[in-house]
Image 1 (tube, chains in turn blue, yellow):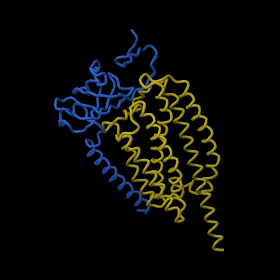
Image 2 (cartoon, one colour):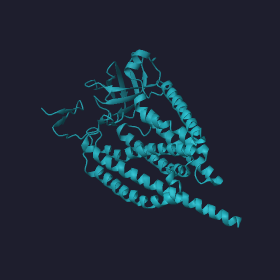
Image 3 (spheres, one colour):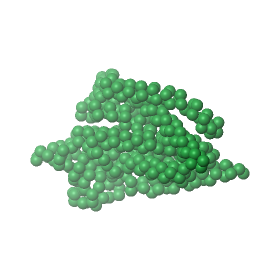
Image 4 (cartoon, helix red, strand yellow):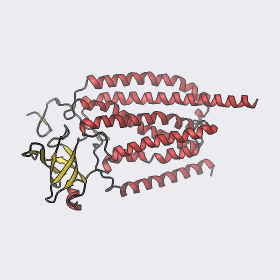
Length: 148
Length: 240
């Protein structure tokens, strides 16, 4: 065997070991490195009240309501499997809308409502113009539908 | 590949190729940016903010492609002892770090109006920041080994380049493996979730920036080779 081949095999074995180690670390980090809890994670794993977490999901359409004080908003966060009520006092980002994604920082109160101290809007991977040919943009659901 | 091991033969091809990459690259980049600024419609949700995409995506691609290039050059240096591979790795590092920094900066500027934050420690952003630090480490190691009179990079630097490549698939998969603030991939093998009317200038800027990147790498390789020749001549003169 030539020295060149020895070096190639050594490099490939080292690379394979490295990728294995990387994958192991990534899978071990799967829960730890998650940026937020989805409502279903909250339901299955249980998060004690007062523990600071991030809650992420979709703002349920029609659930957004403004409180009597004028600054507190109430809304439901859903991931399709579970729904959690949430509230926030302050200025929400522009992209925070019903039917769109949200990541809220805060903690659950004793009644199971998520009290957010900060809101971040999360958008999905779709990009398109408002005036798509033959399509209509729905202001409330943010869906593009074929024109009737 | 060893046909190009001779620097003279490499230079004969690299010299005209630099111009062939540089000018079309500049033209495509400028055209892509102009089209992306003026000819495409605004996004239905984000409005005009979406246009930063035409810089952000090519920068992210070249940051990651740059390190992939460093890893391939490192493999060729360590296994086949290719004399130009060490030079290539060193030449890629600076533009790679630059585009990674551009990606992070444009992402931060984009994140403020859309997400409502300049920076969050989510999987995509953190792994991209790690890539920038890897580049800085590689450049420091390469400079240290170049001072020992090797011209290219030392074997230790090459091994570092190879080990650092593990971060590339992590960046790519970070939005799939973990819940993240950054949205999932828009362009996959199954197609694009970016509408065609917004997508086409992105093709221009990706191609344009890639050609520019190639031109910069060739220029830097030529500079490093020229510096090597100067150093060799100086040493001969010093010896008398």
